[in-house]
Image (cartoon, rainbow, N blue to C red):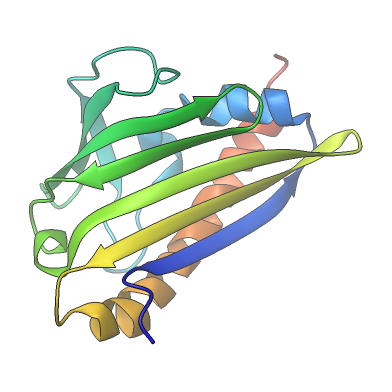
Length: 160
């Protein structure tokens, strides 16, 4: 039975509070943590951001190192707990594979630390689910694991 989407979840402990981790990670400079891996491009820049990355409905354009772009919209934001977003309007290869991606980061207190969980759900076009599930998702899991580690390092450096 098909879910209709292909989720990839990664998580790690952060040696800071959930509130601090989210304060750093939600508005983080994307090129700092999305540095590329194999065929998955880095984020080169973010442009046309409509407002601070703490208000649902705000949008921005993510520009990748291969020249492709995607529209990102913040769909949910609960301070110190979670934020979610949707990526659409892909250019480049992704436009042929997926209609959209939903992302969600959650921050859960764990004593003096926090558990940071990131789920990235691909919504493949018809006939592309197997390719996304068996090729893209495993590559993305490796990329997401490395990206999450960089985000957590930034949060742990913070003195917020």
